[in-house]
Image 1: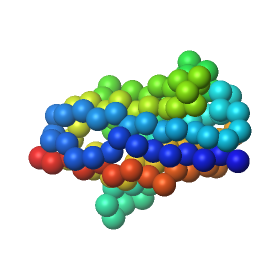
Image 2: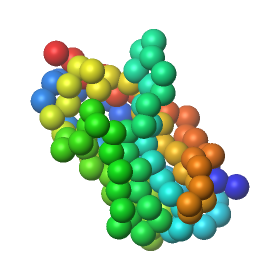
Image 3: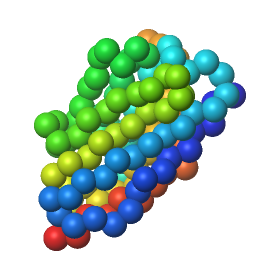
Length: 118
């Protein structure tokens, strides 16, 4: 069983930074794909960033490239999302997700709110 818990959300002014964390408990973590998604108010959930099991390969949504960085510490079973140069349109509930290597995201956290003021 995989249990994902996000933390680090909050309120920040435009141009600021936040770091989200996602702690994963349960089964083996190091080979899993891990990622972040977000759901802005009134909109569909969208992909933000993803990481291979080793962390050697990362992927980003177009709207966050160059501003957000995903990383992971497999020893701590934790994945991070460093968000910089935040914009009001980054306001959303951010979700951590995990899945088997080469598979789909099948496990989800409860979400953490990020609010960026203009």
